[in-house]
Image 1 (spheres, helix red, strand yellow):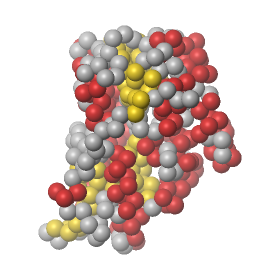
Image 2 (tube, one colour; image 1 turned 180 degrees about the vertical axis):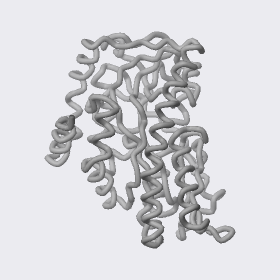
Image 3 (spheres, rainbow, N blue to C red; image 1 turned 120 degrees about the vertical axis):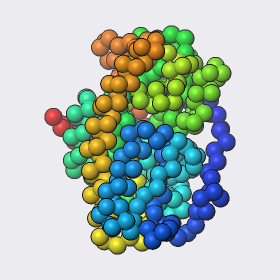
Image 4 (tube, helix red, strand yellow; image 1 turned 90 degrees about the horizontal axis):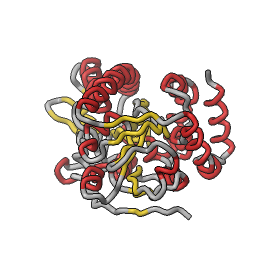
Length: 334
């Protein structure tokens, strides 16, 4: 039985402010504007990538089409925003792929713990037939998959002490992403996973509601979680990407030429985003070390123990023959 504590946060979407309606695409000053949401701040690489897309699309369309990005969680958390994209009330959303576990089974494969060997392996998978196959599968859920963005390696950071061995996870109250797979992963590691909206994590850490959280390095920095949890342990438990999706309803209202522009801009934004991500990770790590954050590398034997502990996740969340086939193909890529 999963030992989890679920905290229901009050998630609000500022629908009235933006006058969402069934027409989806706003028109102002002769330019039709797609609305995209992101929980990250303006300077975050995923937000910058979609801003880059906006510039490319405006240029290609002669300023007849563009994108407006609502960042910093202005419209709310990821899960309810995804529903708005599916219904056509919001045009685009950058979302963690783990948040799609419940609606798109094939995406679960990318969220499996300790699946990818390194970033190079991940990129080969995403940029090849497997990545495209999963993007195409989203059509059944009312979504157009446009691009994968890097989300780095997810690691555990704690308030009181570092994680140096598997036993350090025992009974640790840790904030996890709102997905059943995440709950199971940390339950298997011996922790008490707490399902909590991303926007409420800093407060939970500062109030001792949770003792730890897990995320990538840039998110850890941009949200200032390091001020409350200064022990950053390189567990490297997942390397799941983020994904940019568009409403299939909105997509159908675009011309073939506009669809081509958007796909081209999305592909180009991936290259730009990856470069920004690498630079940001290097810069953030140096800055955090100066700020007093304690980084610790887990020994290989402990990583092996973590890997073995979470193997039941594969049986529960990737037992479908199609998922099993994807796993084998991913592991076969050199």
